Length: 129
Image (cartoon, rainbow, N blue to C red):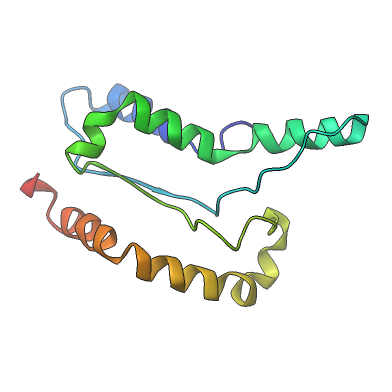
């Protein structure tokens, strides 16, 4: 719990393993942004909110962007995460993902096509950075 977006752990581990090697690119793939929900007053509601916050990966992505602005400016960090339409799809619903996510994902991929191309170019030729 709390590490559904392991970007900070990955960066830390990579720096431990290869301290003198610069990053070519960090690619972070999200599973959809969560919807905003009230905390509630009942014990069960508060517990569900705590679980949702502990597994909320977008907060980690935001913090990483704020703490590492140079990674964005140098085109070394890319995060792709469907903005709308997947908020209420739980991780346990993987069996029906095709019909649930395909339309929203295709729309999103069309929106971020230029960023995907930029990221793919760097991945194909990391020395160009």
